[in-house]
Amino acid sequence: MDIGRKDSGEKLVELYKRWFDIIPADTPERLEQSYRLRYQVYCVETGFEDKAAFPDGLERDGYDERSVSSLLVHRPSGSVAGTVRLILPDPSAGDAPGLPATRVSADLRALVPNELPPTSTAEISRFSISKQFRKRREDGLLPAIYENSGQPGDQRVIPHITLGLMQAILRMSIENDITHLCIMVEPALDRLIRRLGIHFTPIGDLVDYHGRRRAHYCENVSLAADIYRRRPEIWDVLTDGGALWPKPL
Image 1 (cartoon, one colour):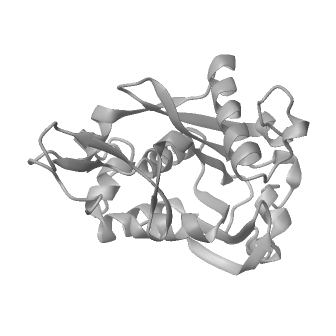
Image 2 (image 1 turned 90 degrees about the horizontal axis):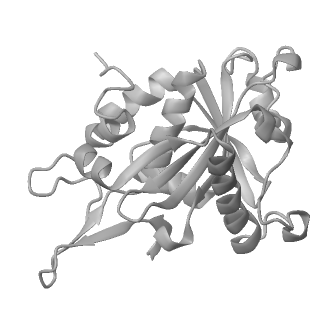
């Protein structure tokens, strides 16, 4: 079943908004929800971080001091379905953004500052989805939830919750004057977002960084235009029907 199709004439963005809210993690209570989900994903489920380092069950690090985070909330239940943060550039880093990804990837460092402006490049980080919202599909973990109308065999896919986190990234970028993004992304997530028409530029080889990951980067205007060209219905969700980002000419 195509996650991008329209059901009963309802636009994808309308269907999405009926099920999910994106809220900033801008209070101690919301940040705690973000850190708790990160602990579940990064410490308990994947083991990328040491559980013993976070006895309170809240995963966080020094980069949170210069980050902004968002929560994706499932409206019917009030459950936190996902969280993501944007690590903002370090003003003291000189001609580099001072981001974890640029420290890990020599190929990303080689782009700085011409292709990754030091004052307006941020890093997508701690992209986390609650286990209860994940379903295993043939090529890996593809988060999805389902709406059942009650009629036998009538089950339709509610839009991929990854889109909500991507919209949160776009919102945070706009609010913080970020023009470029980088990310250390695992192959499964890279395949997933490419299926949605979201194509970051890969650079370099896979490295061992919270698992096997490859550096990717993008310029936001070009990325949005490319998504609109490939999958206009996905662009509609990411930009909240064009409210966040103007339609490309």
